[in-house]
Figure 1 (tube, rainbow, N blue to C red):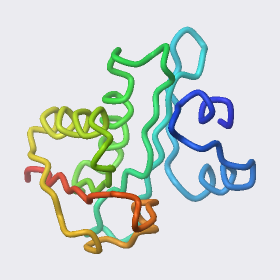
Figure 2 (figure 1 turned 180 degrees about the vertical axis):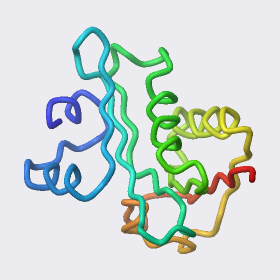
Figure 3 (figure 1 turned 180 degrees about the horizontal axis):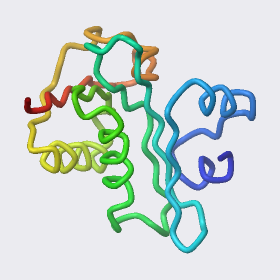
Length: 142
């Protein structure tokens, strides 16, 4: 997973112990194209059924971008708990991520709406304050 993180700038590759912790405590999906790992998504799903799915990271290697890999990863995560809303955070300057999130909401027949930072715990969103993040929620129909 470290190699994939290194390829997905601006992500900072995590040390092995942090990756192991993510793999054992969160939902981690890895995308492959022709047996090559090209992307991943990390999500946190709390045991409380009223909590949303927290999308913590989505990354696609440069050679696989613009091929729908990120959207497919997000849809696969959403399919794990279709009754739950989705929560995520993006930096204001990350236009590609915000565009992907809009397409994701559309694919779920939903709208994405900004929510006040602090609505969700920073740890659930895997963010740190002061880095320009905005929180978003996709309320699923039903």
